[in-house]
Length: 360
Image (cartoon, rainbow, N blue to C red; front, side):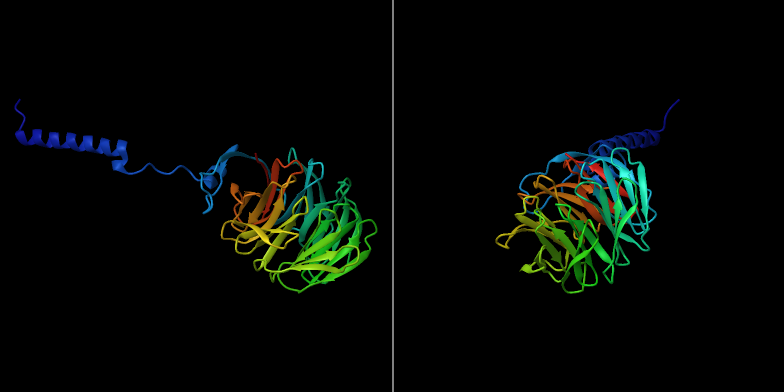
């Protein structure tokens, strides 16, 4: 049978087109290969995971890649988780929530050990006493409660504020509690008797906070207007006012050795201050979102910050270089805190969960 010449030409053209198509698919027509999945997408699908530090303008070499394990996701709250804290021995966690409860968890298994109920409004923070026997919770109605950690029984009710208490903090020596409120005051309380000791006054605006110096001698209060005040815990006398912090100040933390402070702001930037000189030593530039929490690692070598974009960043405290980004939450982070051994971080989020991360 004789094949028409036109048919031969169309067959040749089709074969050539097929060859060109194969070359295009194999080579990408000279275009670069697609980028690998981002850290966020990896975190959303599997553990253990790879988390890569974001590149900053000051980073001269590519950031290292570190193995990060999402060990636990704590899900029993029915509303936003406002804070999370480790027990001093690292065996338990306590979380606070807008649902009006605080929950104590087994830090190894994620099992609920007990639920603390008694506040009439949202629980804004929950922290352990240094000896691990007690927990103090702060409330949106201006009260704080001291609980027996082992039984969940109420020990003391702290009344005196007239507005929401943003945070409560136990002094490192375990003798005193400080609470910071939207009523423009911070108050110190005898941890044993619940007696009001001092009222420290400041401007009543923004996000008030209060933290202790490592030696329990000084209370540092922060205000929205870019200032922080140091007070003698024994007398309530003002020792010093730090000015020039980035406005508005959202949170602050004292280094374990007491020589430095890190203060974070709503623009996603944190500054490390030298306490003795009052000068800025380093600036940490995170995501362009409010930093809601900042904490030093127990050895003082690293800092973790929590951001409104749902991620937490780990920083080298000596160089200011970003080391890790923790991304698994689906919305705003309220806190990020190191475990006592410095090997894990717990984050609390408005997505109603807390996550325990094992970090290198």
